[in-house]
Amino acid sequence: VNTSACELTGYTKEELLGETIRFLMFPEDLSAVEDDPYLYVASQTPRERRIRRKDGTEIWVDHRISVFDIDGEPQLLVISKDITQERRLRRELEFEHAFTESVIKSIEPMRVVDVDSWQVVSLNPKAEEFYRQADTAGEVVSCQQVGNPDAQCTERDCPLHLALEQQQPVPVERYLPKMDRWVWLCGYPFTVRDRRYVAEVVRDITEQKKLEEHVAQAQKMDAIGTLAGGIAHDFNNLLGGIIGFTSLMRMRLDKESPLLSTVDGIEKSARRAAALTEQLLGFTRAGGRKVESVDLNSIVDSVIELIGRTFQKHVTVKKSLQSGLWKIEGDSAQFEHCLLNLCINARDAMPDGGTLTITTANVTVKRDGSKLGRVLQPGPYVLLKVADTGVGMTPDIKSHIFEPFFSTKPKGKGTGLGLAMVYGIVKAYHGHINVESEVGQGSVFSLYFPAAKEPAVAEPRREEREPEQGTGMIILADDEDVMREVTKEILEALGYSVIDTPDGNDVMPLLEKYADRVSCVILDVLMPGISGIEIYKQIRDTYNNVKVLITSGYYPEGEARELIESEDVVFLQKPFTVEQLSQTLAEIIGSEPR
Image (cartoon, rainbow, N blue to C red; front, side, top):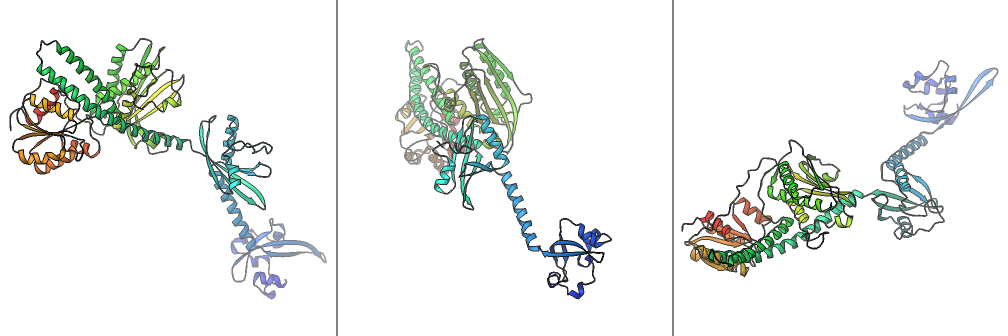
């Protein structure tokens, strides 16, 4: 036993001499020792083992064993080296290697390229699978020099060359048409022992791009909707004047007058124009809505019966309706218009005939990574799907189909408002619409509506009656001169006395003067200076017994809508007829004076 052995174990030479190998072993290791400890030591591989020092601490040693003979007796020479620190470092390196390897395997596809040879020196399994798919599709993902150093890279935004030039990570986005995928590529330059490398990381961002397109489309449609809503509002004010004056003419003409047919023609044309603006308001979600419990299966049956009488026989109509379909809430007439427009659109896409299939189904949307899970709140929905076998659409056409006045039909064959109205109504009921189409493969429109939580009570349908006469004073505030003038004449023809003003700020002073005589105040929503809603609040707080009728060229949104619906304020949308106005006033104040 030499001095180093004593320093290694902590024992003196005297304490070590005469002891066996068991003397330096931990109790739990003794069971592995054979009867002859020297043979045990000589047979062990590897030669690393732990021993117990005198102070009880553990150290690891590397045994170098030599067997020799002295006077016919076998002897062992054991040289031990303390490898405790070395072994700890090796274990740490093994852990780091295993950890790094597991991370590399779990992240996005990554490959490492030697810049001098442009050969791939390392790639993880995901990269191996990704580039194999790209090669199969004939797609060049990034740099043409990889694996082919003599080639010239023709990509202006090559992430590898950009990273090497700028000596920093450089990300780029690229569309791979042959794989129909969007990828995010980033080059990471680094140097090891004076040798240059660049790592390329690939991330599939196809779903992210689709989501961005969805958001951009929604923002574009909202912007167009705001514009269309303004146009519809102005048109409704103009049409209100036309329809109002024709109604007055009818009231004043003798029933046998030859001019009645002319008046009817003017009114019919104005009503058709009003229907057009109603479609615009449907697109902008600014049209008034009834809320009732709706069975889409019944809507489908009704529309199929209608188109069965009007569509040509070369279009075959099929249906697949789920039994026990959940109800939805809304205006059944609007849902019917939606489906009818989609069916007409499908028919026009099949000029040589084909099959139109209407499907309904219950769908539960979950909070997950699916497309529906990203655009809809989790919960139960009802699916209405309309599929055709027609000509299909190019991606460019598909991106514009919901825009007002966009149409691929010949001039005079369509207004370009049908699908815009469908889009607006779906969004108005917090639904979602998805379109799948390829040229020559037909189109599929899938509409998702939230299922009703509780059955809604249907509103009674109002029938127009003959104009009802009335008495009393009415204050009329409308900044549109034509609309104010015709409304005043109609009211006076119905028997009311009218004080009119284009300025909403005049209403409260007028009420202060005539409060005991006023039967009703008629307010337009949008007026300069002060809105009709603000005036209503002032009337409610000061003269809560005064009745108010709100009118507008569109159904108000936001706070105005909430106020009208929550406080049961009577609302009449422009353009309105003499009959509609007289009936509404009769319901508010009655035909008798106050």
